[in-house]
Image (cartoon, rainbow, N blue to C red; front, side, top):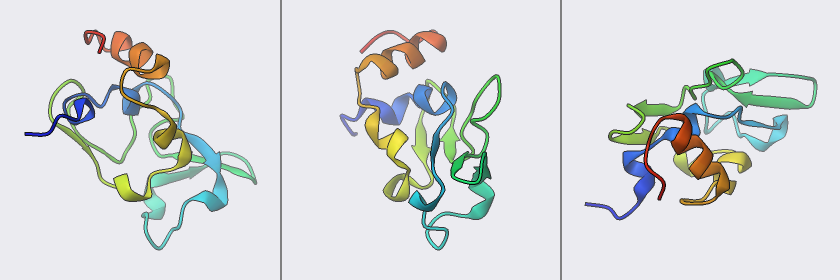
Length: 100
């Protein structure tokens, strides 16, 4: 069993738009179907540019067992959220999960 609280959460993947510079993602490593173009210079993870965001790369159920299908190749906004930081706590609260 892992001590990583993210593997039983996934709230951040279903709380925020994940936008990044379009060239940050290597399409040979990440399916183009998981990326949406926002502007000529910005893209986002599919499913996160909506009122109720839910990243298309998230497997599992928020608050249950979760995993990111592109974890090793995830964009910088995903790498910046850390367990227990402000964004993590806001995402967990949005999904009625207890704080870390």
